[in-house]
Length: 288
Image (cartoon, rainbow, N blue to C red; front, top):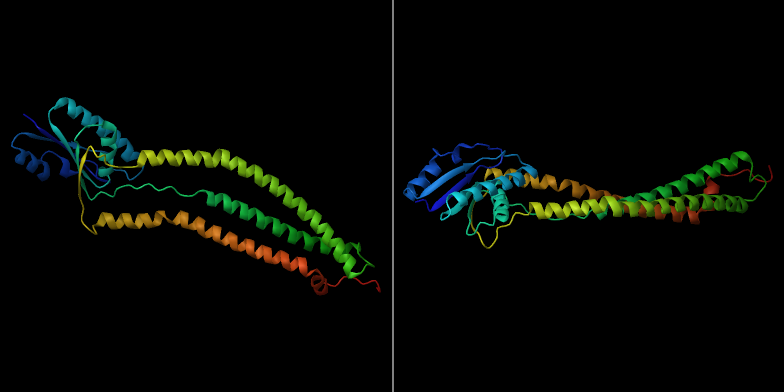
């Protein structure tokens, strides 16, 4: 009579690994210790290191465990899983609802899901729009200065009058640019919030629910791992590399904030130092 069924699952990049086969040392020793009351079964999956592969393998393992439960209704079940297969065992246990399922993990990097703030991207876009407005106003002031100097529009006028004319024209042009960008920014923000960021939020929640690998209190778990093994070292490096995109967005957001401060300082210089600008670029005087 079989009273214990053990399923062995290969790890990442190890499809059809030798250690899960019936004639391998581990399953052979388990059957020997069980004295005929233990059956072992290999379960092989693709071993691909992706989000989709373990989830799909979890569904297949669930069907396998349910089939074993029908085949041996009175036997207890144990899953021995290596590497990411530990998470696959969690997915299968969550979906199969098999009571008293025992899971043994060997060097498993347990998946932890943490949401990231995507609002930084929107803040960066807003900051970029402000910088564009400031640059447009500055370029408009310089362009108007050149045009009025060449056209003789302010010929015969005092420096104060010339400054006033260019300042008003610049203010009108800059205000129009700012208003257009403001309206466009509001519409763009509403569109991003209503479509792109909403879709991202839904996708993020789905991924968190789908990829969260947890062991229920109904199951018994044994975790076996070696400190500093090659898999853990490699995965720690991958974790650091995975943080680079979020760190890059934070860096760009910080740089854009510095750009806003520079833009504000520039606007103050142009606002207060109009006369000094004309001193540097003298206009034709009325005496000429």
